[in-house]
Length: 263
Image 1 (cartoon, one colour):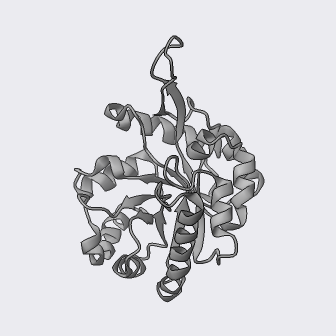
Image 2 (cartoon, rainbow, N blue to C red):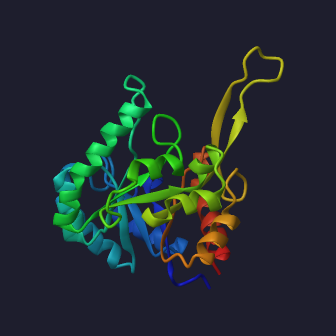
């Protein structure tokens, strides 16, 4: 039996064509406590219809599930819809502009977060900031620098073990760095895959997102550290796989694996 202080969620992005009923049924069969919902164009509810979030939350609740977070923008209507639906957090990923450079982009993103604090306070909804490879804040150290001094009850950190691992960070260090801001933990996994052979003039690499057991991030070490520090909150499986044809099988296996680590 999994640690009851840990709630398991899944990001439902891969199943955008399912009806809400079928989506709820599938998530329930996975053994989740709830979901992160992609409040984005083309999904079961889009940002323009954020006022429909309460109805969506009721449909999930009919299956014994919660909506723990939405991945979306930060328009006030999204805050309002989340507040009415009882959804506690909006996940975002601050971007770094190649034209501006890192330092100027971080300053811009910090100012955006500061401007969101009144909406967080007005609606009682937190903004969760996640690191991501590429043109984003890439690791936990960068997140700490971005979030330092902001009120954690309004602006929190969503720590993603795969992206920290891709950046070369150890899970125990990454979690310790952003612990005072920690709002949710994402579990997925990835590694670097070489596209050409050693005879090439320049090596080419890509990131390959794989199952929980196979990548650079050690899920057992993540779980052990969270249990050691008595983490109480949501662990969300991102269901991101380069082999997206097998997503249903892979997420079932990964959910079972994740739960076993918190037993």
